[in-house]
View 1 (cartoon, rainbow, N blue to C red):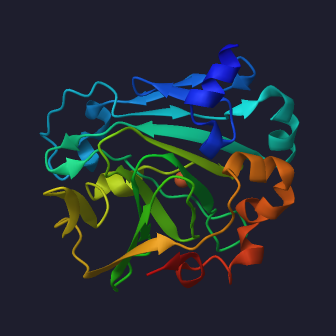
View 2: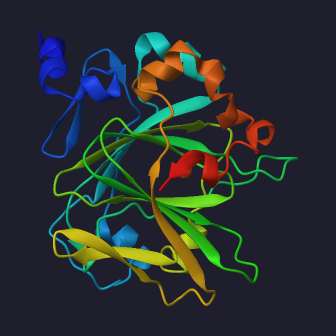
Length: 265
Ligand SMILES: [Fe+2]
């Protein structure tokens, strides 16, 4: 009975999983597994903010559920060295900034010049994904800000670091799939107090301002994701994991995994 209730009231339609959300926390059916939830507090986030002295009443800015899966699908994820994760980002502000993840970059795949990509999906809420080119060698820092709503998916292209921002007034629920063959690096955005731009409140919307810690000129574009597929990410992966080979072997797809193929104005 409990599972049926979760399906009806919950996030099943967009996530493809019998999960729900209550008071900013994920509720999983008894058949759904996740590693113990990790919580990000303000203290851990301060060095990534425009205003490190920001105060907030929000105890956990965001919650991370790693390796979420139905028990019956465990082998599919293992065989494909992939992890499906869910992040719940609470709504609110840290100073003028919208609550966001601290962000990270992915390493190069060994023996290639390509960093690992990742695929994101909005399950519920209003997201602004910030993708920033990580090569700062004497040219513009290029950023793409991708506005996305429920059901939309977007790919973090190789060579870009990323941050997820909740620009709505309700919890933002995101899922992502990435290869388990690498570890994320958080030091880049820590060094620069975040990305080269901040999303700050502006009446009922947001505006983008430059982070003065970056000395290079910057260029950014606000875009939408190009449609990839309609099915919830989880189900698409379980049905055809071979279609997600680009997560494991990005060097084979590097001509496709570029901004002009992934985003639209
Ligand atoms: Fe990532």
